[in-house]
Length: 84
Image (tube, rainbow, N blue to C red; front, side, top):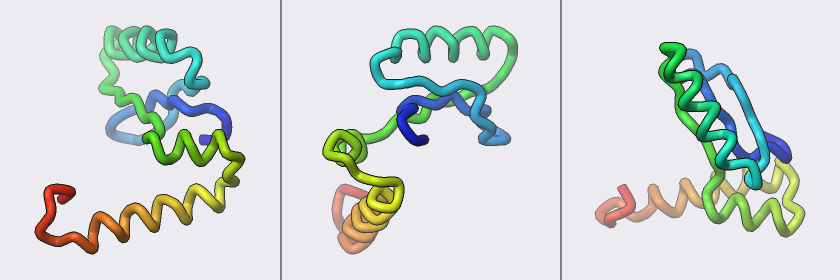
């Protein structure tokens, strides 16, 4: 996603229809409503707290991929926890 933290994607094709920065969240939600009124099934994709913090601290895309793998591994390693 680069510097654009919100993406509106078509739910079926996963094509990005619109993207914008966190500060414009209201506009993103308004755009999503417009797409839905046009008959599209859309979803808003936004980063989690960990990703936002990493970006603020200057993480690269490579760093973010590593972070996602670490978080996924941690969640998967707790088979009987509430995280699944």
